[in-house]
Length: 79
Image 1 (spheres, rainbow, N blue to C red):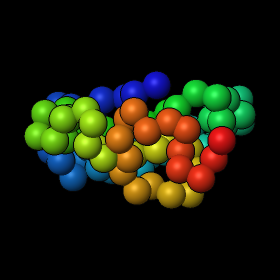
Image 2: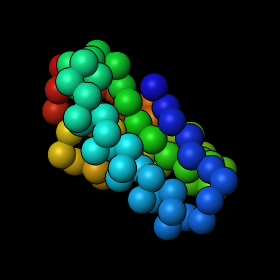
Image 3: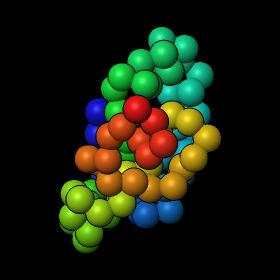
Image 4: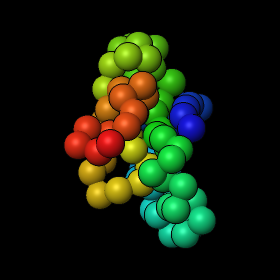
């Protein structure tokens, strides 16, 4: 699942991604699906500037918020 945010200043969208990560982590049913369904978020500006193969997507689950490519699934180090 890829969530693309737009319509606000970059710093606002960055904060929305942080808030979305917190909200998703608090939803136990969503968290349980995290190993089967990739859940990432990006901004429309990142997508337009760097393209869909670049590390532009922030994982919505887990402790690592380092941007990854939306197509890098499964995450590195897992099977």
